[in-house]
Image (cartoon, one colour):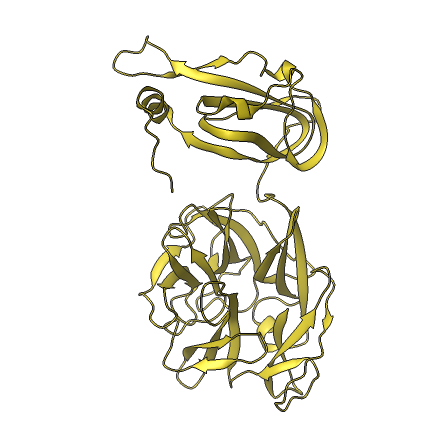
Length: 407
């Protein structure tokens, strides 16, 4: 892990290295570099006024690591956005005449957009402007113009501002942690003193157009650390680890009074961004999906609940709607909830089993509707090799074998 900080004895800011065997517990990592350094785990001193905006691991480019730097120019109230590259995380080289922003500051994040075949840099438009947009590049030399992607709206609390967003690709989607600057007092001038930052959930299907989710705190430091600043994520088999810093102080003092920051690790279960939760422990929950063209394989559930069963229905056309052809779900013999062996427990990859030995892999090419039943728990995700279709798309597929274009 690379991290930076500043203290009075530094005379500026420095970049440090730490190491961990489990991704949770870190210790300073002694590194052997020939450059003059004040600490064994120091990598480099940052440029005057510089802060690391983001470090990106590029598995496609020639230089594996890109470090986006924001260098504040207080005399002109501007920011110089520079790019450093490295092959080993230890030796960094400034890329001359390359600027990834127009004077923006952290928060910043980068992901490779598989749908557009470009690198997307999530950023502010310039210093002090609290909204979220992006620039894109294919070669890390030239960048497109800034495009706004996300902001606050009338449903937010008064004076709320969107401070920035950490975003990443996730199984064909894109997930964002929108940093919401809120809990402010009314002022006639700039919003700077006081206020906290929590993270809300945002998402995109193509990495270009973004939406916010429930508009409630998803990740927070609580009253102990009201300023959260998320900057990294790693995936493990059954969970995700998010890395960031948090301050014991409110906005304003958090930046001007060093020594109150902490590095945090937050754990999230696999696919645990959102869930359907039972209303109470005794009332059965039932979720009916849209039609799915089944390509093969089995159904996978991320669930923590009791008495989990799945009923499977096949869709056909009805003939009683003039001018339209509506799909009607009919139960498949041997695939109903009573045929499914109930599961109770916590699993990130539960595969429903049927008493008669039937499997969903035997239903290749059919359009299916799934009935998921459970009690006293949460359903986090449903996955498998299928294509979701609307009614008319399902009819067109059954009649002509035509599938919709998917993102």
